[in-house]
Length: 425
Image 1: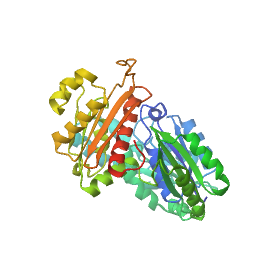
Image 2: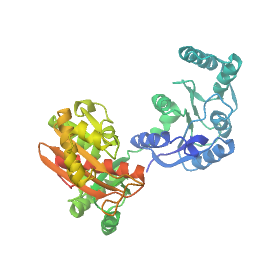
Image 3: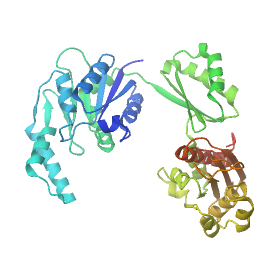
Image 4: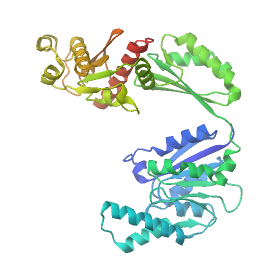
């Protein structure tokens, strides 16, 4: 591999899980696309000594180090100061930058109608305007500027200091890439490809046997497998020179798992959306146990209004009857959690919204409500469309949240099977 990069995500709120890290994975993928291999994403709390240790660790093996977070006006926002000290550069207030940040803060406070302590605001503004000598300032997107800090001595990596809010970090990213120290690293980068094969209904143990069988043919490939909600992803990173080895991997997977190979690239959400869009079809949902998470997943991409007219969450039997036309006799005879009701929910959604495709979901999310005949985790799904009907009944393991998440994934594959064929859901 060519040039490497490491990432430090700062903030006790991220370290403790109160805030999910969105910056580390985003930065890693952006750098991968630019040909930089990211080997580590390190999360540290708001302690200067921990950030300093992380910088030292990453600087030993990487050509570029990036940080996110810790650039605010409060006492625990110390990233810029610690990075400056680490790089051997003294920090001082950039008065012009302080004025620019102050103007931003004034506009923000006026727009929100907040009454603020002028002295406290001034001190916070000047803190954010402290810049290590010789650093390149990246203009603020919010109130915090970014920095590109080269080492004062030696041949260590430059450190890119970015704000914590993902929208600010992403908006500042082009400016960071344009900085000369970063460009110098990117000029040494090599193309790093990443491709994904997706299987549905294949256990990891079977795939492992295939990978062992062809292992001596896969030199130069970095292969990662991940089983998520029944989907088995094979993610492979490789340099262009290993393209022939990747093709051998694809051929082996096709040969051994042609019946469960769903995609050689796009995820199931993209497959479903593209199928609906290309065929000019619409889909409506009727959900009980998943509480609207299936329709939320269907509309989680731009343009979804063209193929998703709506969905109904029908939790009670009364809602199932009145909103979707489920038969009272069916409910009394076989119960709400049954293949028959799943079919009537699908038909009802299709009819109520005038959609081409309808999908119904009914089940027992738990932890209570199960019985010997219908244990917790029992779920029935049905999708109806111009091409026919597909159904699925199963017991989904896990707690209430896991049940819903996994059931929604099954629902997406049910739609994929109805629209495109291939491995059954």
